Image (tube, rainbow, N blue to C red; front, side, top):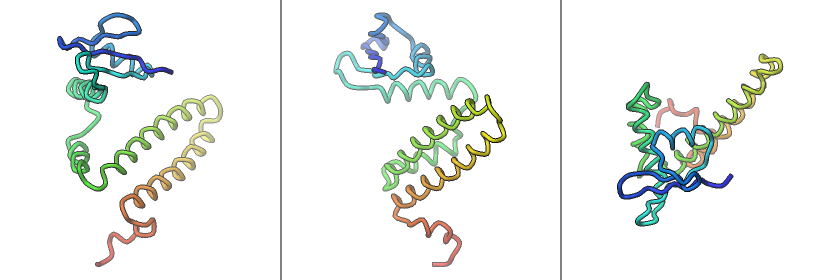
Length: 155
C-alpha cells in the first residue's frame, strides 16, 4: 500500500492529494484508524512533518477523552530521551505495539474455533516473544539475560 500524501499549507490546512480536497485533523485520524499509511509534507519547505502531525493528533485525542498515557507513563518516557537507552527503548515500544496488534488479530481469529485452545496457544506464544524481547532489551542495555534476577543482590 502506497503512502497517502497530505500537504500542509501555511494557513494550517491539510490537503489530501489522493482525494484532491482539504481535510481536517479528525479526517486524518480516521484515515489512520482505517489503516492508511500517510505522509505529511510541509507545502512551503517540502519537509516531512508526519511525526509532528501524528503527535498533534495524539495530543488532541489525549485531551478529549480518557487518556491512553498516564502522567507517570509520560514521565517515564521523557526520562529515556537523550539517554543511552533511547534507541533500544524506542524499538522495544514499537515491537510491543506490533506484537499487541498481531495478538489482537490472532485473538479475533481464534474466536471462530475453540476460544480456550486459541487463548492457550496465544499465551504460550506471548511468553516466548516477551522473553525474547526482554533478552534483546537487556542485551542492548548492557546486561546479560542472566543478570535480570540479581537486582536484589548486594553490590
